[in-house]
Image (cartoon, rainbow, N blue to C red; front, side, top):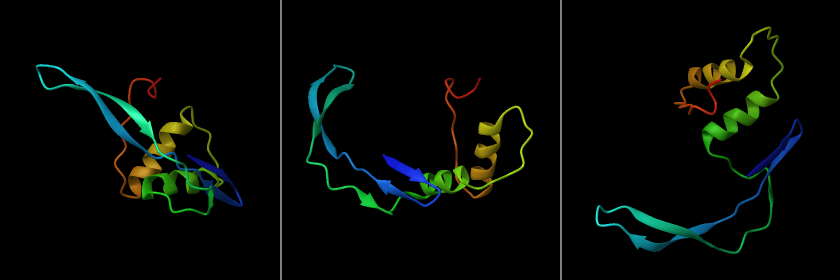
Length: 92
């Protein structure tokens, strides 16, 4: 999780491993998180490139008179070379 402002961001990590609960005859696995100790919050911690791009775009002023600003953000992110897949919840 990243908390971001115009002045920077703080990365909060919540590491876990998956604990196998069961497996179906078809091979499907049922798992639960096995939470590990969380490291201290990291001001300016490294973010994976698509998340860093989203943080950057969040604070880049643009003149936008568009009915779908989220969609525009997706296009800008894709133009930077990132692949975006929206699920039905995001497409409204």
